[in-house]
Length: 230
Image 1 (tube, rainbow, N blue to C red):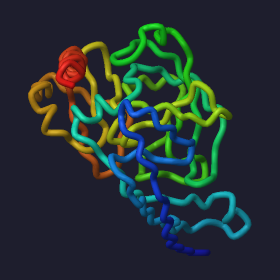
Image 2 (cartoon, rainbow, N blue to C red):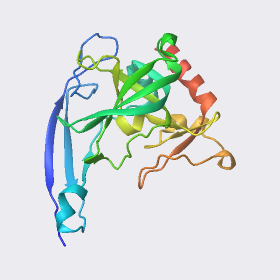
Image 3 (cartoon, one colour):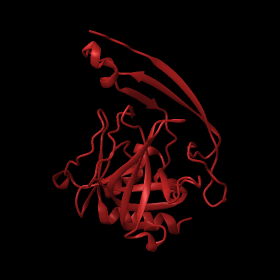
């Protein structure tokens, strides 16, 4: 029986990437309205496993303090807001924070060029097979989501995007009329919440987080109105 716990603090400085200013951002950076230190507390999960399998079974857990954005600000900071279906996992990154790269097909464009519809893009999600990020499960093939995305400018990763606000910028498409915000309820969306009797649980769940069940059509209309206000 082996128990092991380890706490590591990572400090990563984020470079500002203001909407419309044209400044570039590399793969390892996270956007914020101002330069900000991102502190990550890493805790390996304690597990009891046979000694010979210990290193194969041990998985780490990253609890990160994210920069989050009010809905209207998130709309206008995003380079792309799209409905996508995950196709496959392309690979994993380790530095500076564990990430996984997914290939996904764009099924609808809510903000951005309509030419993207039907195209494949690459999406970065925090966490990989060795580390979970904020208890958020990794995407799986067939998952359909609406994501608020920022472009990666690293030439090594063309047509690649990272998720603004990470799990707080993820919305799971439950069906044609229902959309679930999987983390951090937003009071700005209270007016488009579905009545209790019309809500339906999605597949993606984060422990101890409340989802926010939304009217999909009204959600798209709200994004269009937010774009017009800026």
